[in-house]
Image 1 (cartoon, rainbow, N blue to C red):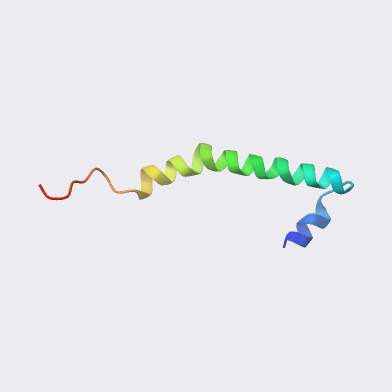
Image 2: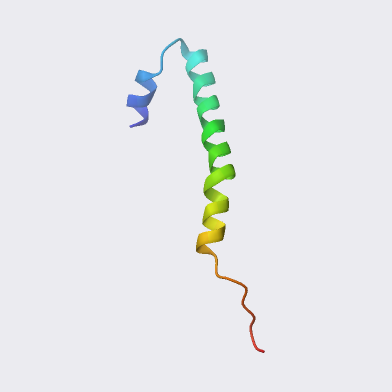
Length: 52
């Protein structure tokens, strides 16, 4: 899969590396901005206490 992606990206080696870095930054930014907050609100249990 990574080899196929690498062949699809245009340009010389340094341009490919730059494009991959930019794509990784965009994916991480999207995860931090939308996915992680949604998962924290959805998946974590509500306020709970032990004992009581």
